[in-house]
Length: 113
Image 1: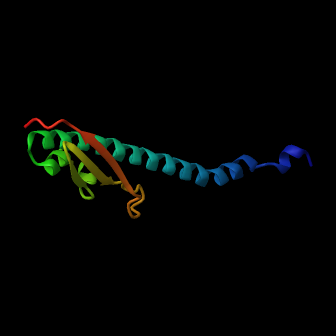
Image 2: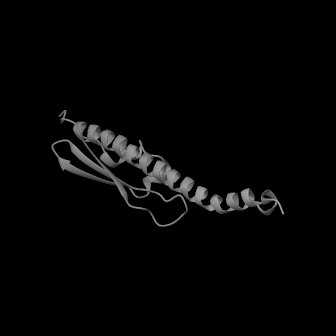
Image 3: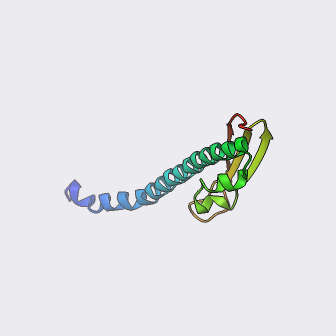
């Protein structure tokens, strides 16, 4: 029997074996993108909260106004004084598992009062 006939279907078997690995790699990449977005959003919210602290308005409302709805639930805002504000949000899980940690950002804006 020629060699190429004994290898019939080999490519299909290799593809089926690699599909789960490709799916896992894609899921990990997507989770990294979600975590990066959470960190970026926390930074934006921290800047808004620091500006609000500088002019004497509500820090939490300012931070929430710069966050997507999905990140508002785990929001914590801490005024560290002198115009410095720390904002933390939960990093959502792509697969509906518990949150994968927190993204924290700090911003400072000189008081304007």
